Image (cartoon, rainbow, N blue to C red; front, side, top):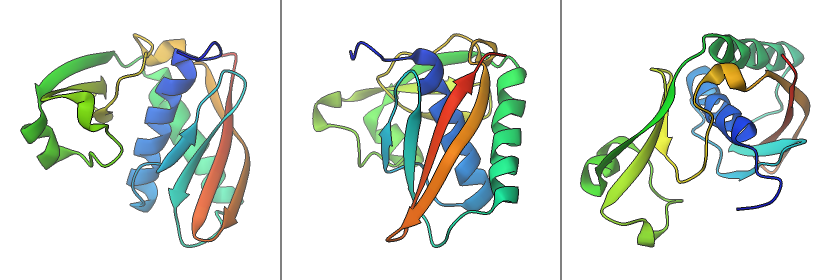
Amino acid sequence: MKKDYDPRMHSAEHILNQTMVRMFDCGRAFSAHIEKKKSKCDYKFNREITELEIDEIEKRVNEVIVKSLDVYEEFIPRLEAEKMFNLERLPDEAGDTLRIIKIGDYDSCPCSGIHVNSTSEIGRFKIISTSFENDVLRLRFKLLDK
């Protein structure tokens, strides 16, 4: 595990991904770099994002965070997971039983990372910059104290 790995930031990434799916139907990030001070997620997208959309993403992510949703794991057979999730980024050696991380009833996805126990531990989510190039929308974000 990287020395600057942060379960708060990683859990926020899950919430951001689900928010992007719900708002834009763009799928989860195909690439992410998650660190303690700031992080980024890349989405397949067809345009630059507006300031109003940035504000709405932040609002929705923070609404989920303040709900104090439980973050927990479940284990399901890989064949069952294939019907529910895109497993392209999952290594083959993940095995026949997959760990699914759930954030209340808001998000669930296969993941091997470490997460908070409750969204109340995350802090406030803030998008610090965006860019759009070659059909890729990059969102850079950080967490602030509550």
